[in-house]
Image (cartoon, rainbow, N blue to C red):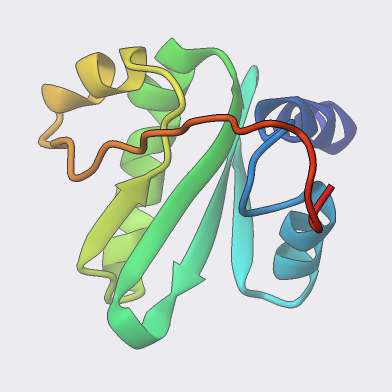
Length: 123
């Protein structure tokens, strides 16, 4: 996957995300706080939280099977090389849990949301 296609996919994946923007992701990559791991048909952003030994993998775009089969081992090895002790994946879809559970991943949290009326100081 080429970089432009990856960034278009990341933008679509985080559309409406309450905590991050595509500009923040690009800044994190540019400033070394994140890395993009790319495959032939997919890509994943890894955000580094070295102070707490954690890597955060999200967003992802492209072929989920390629991500699990080809990119996951590369991500895990890279994290181990950097001394990362835990990998967190922000997964907006339940299928990721099913795909990754057989590789030792477990659900650590569930995010619930309620959309309130669209008025107030933040709108």
